[in-house]
Length: 437
Image 1 (tube, rainbow, N blue to C red):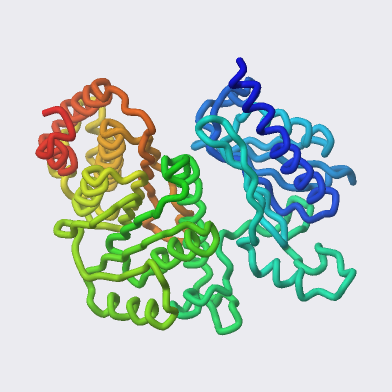
Image 2: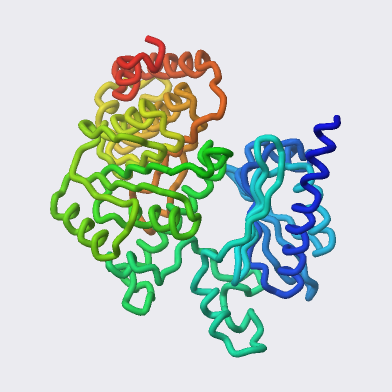
């Protein structure tokens, strides 16, 4: 009891400081967003909606001409929005933070970012830094004295529901111009608008995964992050994750792109040299033969057929904290599939058989990741209007190991039902003793 009292007394001034900064940001119209991540559970109203809450995003809105705070609670399969009058919303946030319901809270304004973080022992700390939205910050800094923030940085502070969507990257970042996404003035080229949306969505997904991974928990939140991106191509996402980690999050990140095509490796190495990017490299190689010295985040987007299995296997074997895959082609399982009696009239059509093979391949991959100690999601990465390769398998390593017997049984039953004899990832894991034989 004495220890709890000591922690409460220690946290009080930090919580009060964060609450004051939040209140001032809202009152002055400078609140862009409050982001609550790493939900710890224990809040009855939230737990009734689901215990797998990913994050809460809070922003200012006006409803019936009165100021409110809008809460967007994001779950893996749904979003829930709640709007509260400002006083009620601030009181609710104070209770959540005092209870330690979230491990991290990030307050974004045009001129600063404030982070409230709790250690494993529950001790709070507040850090104030420069904003990641440097475009908005420059607009505020360059505005004439007395110009309201909402005028100085249009789009960043608009209080209504039609406000521009938050972007994780500043379009004026140099790498985007070098890769042909933006012009010299930092404006996204019309022909690259879809790629720009894809890049931002990728960072959004990665940011959420990072927030709930061991990499964001003390003491590892101060340690270097080693990222390897297999089949990295021209490097749009590779450069983006490097820039976001180092420039926005101020993490000591080491990002390596691995690509088979020499011309793309040379192109990206020239960009790295020209921009003098620290902690970034591009190498020629293949996932089946590449052996990274250190690996915390494994990325493999659009790896064809069993190349995705080899990439996932490499990530598991290396103990990666985050694994991100966007599979392409699903050739191994399709010729093995038996059509169970009730499904034969449906699976007689080739297109349905192909969709079934894709679902089973990625479903088994997700289950195998679960058996290997990861919390795994399979979801639409980005709308089909932007890319037809839109499925993402995202796996975040669990902090504590758990039994895999039930998942292994489920895998065995699914394989038996469809007559599947071989699955590449399963074979690789069994060969290494990472899965029961």
